[in-house]
Length: 232
Length: 168
Image (cartoon, rainbow over all chains, first blue to last red):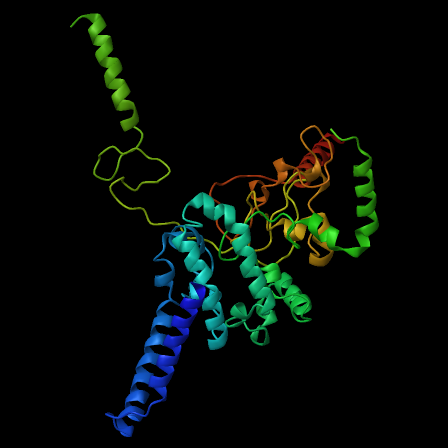
């Protein structure tokens, strides 16, 4: 059975290959080259237009999962409502601008299409339940590309520290300037509500302490004490 | 009209008339004044101006020792929810070294029985219940509050005056 299927499939591939290999009999070389060029332009243009259509806020909030959850949360924040009328829309932060990175992200997004079809977050409860996991994906992505989507607008080189307040200037002048931290390390939850931040460094003090090697002996003692306690 | 009916009528008239006597608009019609001010219900009230938060990071002196310190910076979009507390990412004890922000006071670690916990107690978790940002804005309600040292100075002055009067 499998052998027959294999033979049929291979036969089909060979048939197509022979057709492609044969020189054209009816069409002129000019028609084929110019026609091919035009068809290529149309295909490429169409592909990119369709791709760009999926990179719009309108497209994102055409699904109720995005419209009723994350879009509602975005609207109160500074990236949506502000004095100067500059607005960051979904793709500004969530889709890379460089073409290769964009295609890579779009391929990842096929998982999100799967989620849409099978209703992974089709209720508020399911969405809230998955918020930590979803947020962690974005934190990881922004951490890995040094918060590139933030930096598309907020360029460190262009920052006027005299126009920042003292705390901001200090944090940006030390941790950010030295490259010890990237935007997302401190600016989590600026456009959407946060999940439970238990165990997130910078948010949960116990997480910070656990990761600090200086505290290792104390943690060992605490573990030993806990082990000594009678089990209920 | 029986006396009883007469009293009833007077009571009803008074009850209906009393609120109307509170305020009258320019045409002589009675209006009930409330928090809306003198704008009739049928008209839309102009929104009061929104004042900008003070954002200079300079600590303010407290007007009395028990006053919760005011916030000298912008706190827009700072979440204080069951999931996350943005204030504590700087003001909690463990993070004050890197943030150089004042630590939340030890009273915030105590539960209502005075038992000191390892971290901020749930009843002190929602910072903006007591701590508020400041704005350069006219007073909503006039008041004659004076800090204790000013009251004491005034009292001492009065006492001093009294003594000189009594002096021979």
